[in-house]
Amino acid sequence: MHTRIAALVLLLSLVIMPASALAPQKGGEDITGPYDVVAKWPQPFARPGYIWGSQAGVFAETPNRIFLLNRGEIKLPEKLPRDFTGNWGSMGTAANVQKAELRNCIVIVDANGKMVESWTQWDHLFEGGRGPHSVKISPYDTERYVWVIDDERQQVFKFTNDGKRLVTMLGEAGVGGNDEKHFNRPTDIAWLPDGTFFISDGYVNARVVKFDKNGKFLLSWGSKGDAPGQFNTVHSIAVDKNRRVYVADRSNNRIQVFDENGKFLDLWPDIRPHYLLMSTDQHLWVADGVTNKFLEYDLNGKFLFSWGTWGSFPGGVWGVHGFSVDSDGNLYAAESYGGRTQKFRPKAGVDRSKLIGPPIPLMQKASN
Image 1 (cartoon, one colour):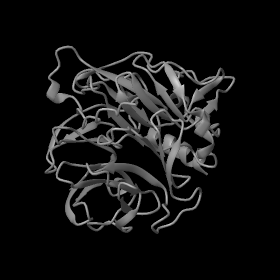
Image 2 (image 1 turned 30 degrees about the horizontal axis):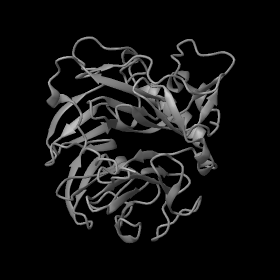
Image 3 (image 1 turned 45 degrees about the horizontal axis):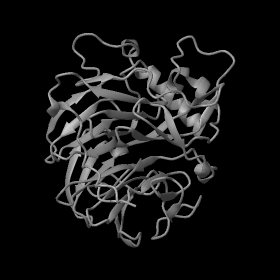
């Protein structure tokens, strides 16, 4: 079912996308903005004869430790498409009609894109689904636990930073629900400084769920619809320093703003928000799923800046599903349709105010 949907999305995208979008544009379109693309990043980690599949998420813990979420690996056909670039997204329907093998779902690479860890011991958690959806570390957590959301298996996982232990598991594997102990295709997570956290839930449910720092259910808000406070595909979530909660209401083409207990505050229309990132300077950065641009807003919803374009060439993006920024200002963008994660390095002499982030810095890791 999901492979047919993916194939349909791909075909519709190619129909509505002008041919000029298939190659870098010159003049008038700011393709990579204040960044340069880092070539040949990451280095291949799929087994010979395979290619990694859809890239669901990315999180840069440091400039030399970047988590990649890989929705499995796909066997390459004997005859590759003429325009094959080495990425899943350039294979057309040839990639989408094959079921990915859920292998190397959580991978860690260094600054050069070389795989240094693969948490294959946890690949079994994603069996029966399509692989993980998002990955984050709370900026307020000195232990730097790693949180992974799996939308199709209906669960939220909390791992030790080294991946050796699964500390917490919320939701019931493969069982959707709308109560205190179940999700229905959850998507993302965000925290308050005291450890309280919010889960955006999600593709089927239409709510935000609030938990205390120990994972105890506190409350939820939202219902299906398009009125203020209602949702249609709750796809990402972020929190500002004043404890306001920003929700990517993707299929309603808007961002909604609430207080921490779900009181509706504001609505920003005409955005197709795939992912949200709150920067230290309290600007909200958005990956837009229609324009395939990165958009910057102040917290009153005023648009400030954008860059980017659609494409499977280096620097173009196709369906940014998650992005992250490291402490050196490097940007990492995981493409669900492009099937790759790209690294963008700040251009020499660039106006730093045009860069995404920096994000709220991670607290110092606790000493052993």
